[in-house]
Image (cartoon, rainbow, N blue to C red; front, side):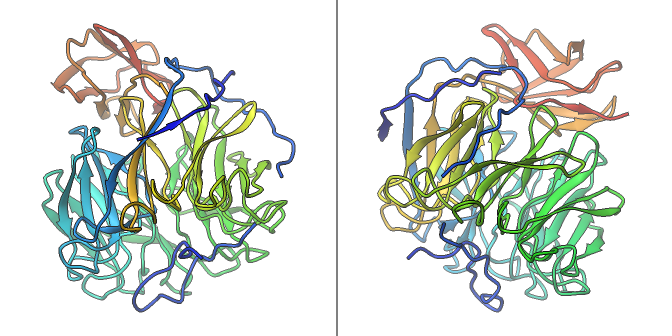
Length: 487
């Protein structure tokens, strides 16, 4: 266990390249370019909904991957399932040695391998799992399946896996990222390659497995999307491509659930390049992201962009504070943004950072013994603790899983994060016993307590976009983000 000596401010107001793959498309890599901050622009994030409590910060290594339990944790974040456990994937290793695995970790750090891929059912999962509203976990594999072009699968929390779709190049190939479930119930995602122009695709698939290709990238509008899509409060989906666009440095795009596509921004190197990590929408409605390369020091950037496409650079990494941010940011329950860098920091092995209105604070620099090259985004579990993984480092240099506590309190999470009046919603949390009330932005809702980690409810008549609040005997637990109510 490693103790971090400094306490962050509270928020007011020769490594393997990322994307290095094995097998037939190992030449399609997301390259990492080695690269002093500019003026920090204040984040207009909404007020803090959870107090930070104690100031102490503690990083704990929970798992050292060792081939049998997987090798090289994937680029997607861990996901907290309805049973309270955290699920993730490894790109290689597992019972079949080279095809990867799915694992779960209890919040205390006990790991169980729940599935090992065998190529027939998929191989080399790079993206995150998705907890869908029907209770299944959905994900993708980069390779394997009927045509060795990758798959979409679903799995029960207990580990029973079903292949939902095998790509065949014409409808896309090599899905790099995980999926997102939109308010209409369908799942949306991207493929890194394949499609009509071999530059990747955007698709939707029903939970039952009916796939529709919505867009074929042609290079001019971007190529090789590697990050998961997000659905914004306005109902539109947003994403990034690693390459392509006007300057071949990647793009930011939007697409409606029905398939109407728009190119919002073309990176040109000065504002960043190769945006591997994708976007997220903060409570203020603005989209935030990272570019792995480019910027003032060629070490990558943090940026914000409005849904209409107005871009602002917030931070240029300079190596000492991290380099090559390869994962999306998250907004924690204290309102601040948290993320990771693949390289840089005190030891050159990557960092965990916090970004708030006062600028960037490095919370941890990895030293290889506790992990190296954190490629994946952090996830904040409902107990307030952050969890994540590193691609390298640890006892066997095959990567680690870790937790980071910064003293934040409990909160609740909704699945889905948006919906219409009458939509069924699962509320995940910690110690959800003796519940007295559930409200959607102040509007009361009927509810059923399923377990200590799950409540079921529906969006009540009169509800508007805002936080979900659960009244417990020990006080209120508030959702980590606003629930978007669509008309």
